Image (cartoon, rainbow, N blue to C red; front, side, top):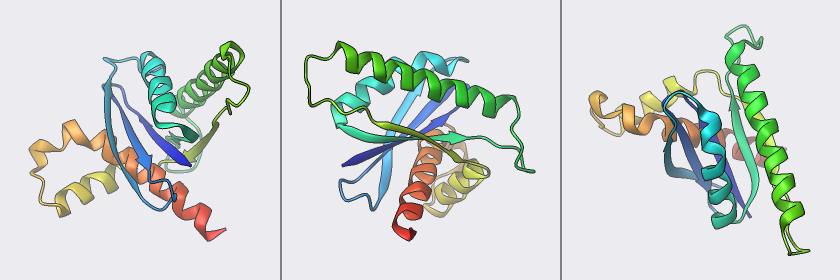
Length: 152
């Protein structure tokens, strides 16, 4: 069983994968999207297939007061679009064993701050954060989901 964490950004979509035991999240790269992260869905579908992902965790960028703004609504639309594409892939699949991965949203407030802090603590120069902060944010999102699952 493998889970995929997704951090939707305007320049990059960060990805993270879990280990098969659902204990640890690790960076899995970025998808460069140049302003429209809906373009990342095809590449995310490839990762889901290649890595045999069972569950996709998408960061939901709530506002600090917990309400949903424009970015959160866009993330919900992205997740819904991913679910539709997964359903279509399932219908097109010849395999009767294909399981559609579950897609969940998780509050991602302050994940970028946490990601920057982790990179700083790893002695990564702050001018080197930009290329990796999205995937590190995806790690934080996914690790949060994994930890919550173990706590239940």
